[in-house]
Length: 417
Image 1 (cartoon, rainbow, N blue to C red):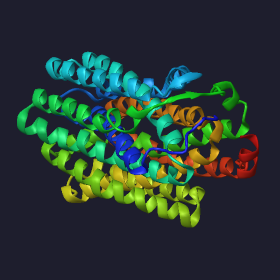
Image 2: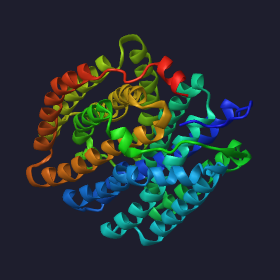
Image 3: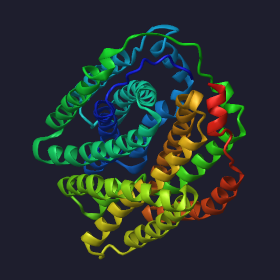
């Protein structure tokens, strides 16, 4: 996509701060939905198959590619100002209102909570399209890596708040207060974007239109979508019921909240940095394979814990944090590095959204399936099946990665622009 930029771009630090706040806010909602709320529901005695239905909330993230071109066309009119600020501002307010409603309805009605969070997810996914697009266009090429670091780091910090601080607040002050605090944080975190560099948009003329069809015509995109599906199944399916498992193992909400928070902030963020270093040294392909192998060992450990409840709590929690924060962050830094390499710079927003949507589809299906399996056959079976899936993923991903070849060079991109 070609843009008519002036001689000056926004300060990179201002852009990092602006988009970083939005990424934190998005991950607060995700952490609350997929880590915090399942633990609260399990503590209230709800069955695992009902808790697994929360993964229906992933559906908007899985399908946002359907409306991403329309959002981009509104955000970047043929002639006019960039409308990222309008989309983000309106979206964050709607998300905060959704959490306020959830605070008063409570978590006891699972279907009501799912309905509210589903609406919030639709809005959040839409905001993400605008945020990612703005970050790519506002940052010079040499700063794109730091922009990705803001995304990864923000996601782990947001998860620490949504799955950590939220549970601590629920344990001490109750659901109502904890959820209202999360709503307030969303509004505060959006201020740097709404009143920052995005507020200084100027009139521009644009001469290109994003296209999903064009993306899907590229063999590299189709192969990349298969890799994304297999990898996400290997990494996420086994951890879908981790929160309920830890509750059943005997951990209280305050302990889970503290561990989730510390794990995301320290282990997760450190894993993201380590993942970046490993990708730089050995390439993303090797890191993907190694992270799956490590996850297999940890899933086997969880299967052992489910049968041997005498294992010390600190050992179980250490493995849980290593798996959900450490190994996960290393692997997904490598996967997102692949996504960036496979995306066409002329329409990176559409290509990247397609990969993210595949992540969402596979995560949703695995979460629902894991809940049903754990309810019927027990945690041990769920973890063993997940380990088998991960084992099958290694050779499949290795074969698919060997088929991937860069579809364009830097020289080609310069010539086309």
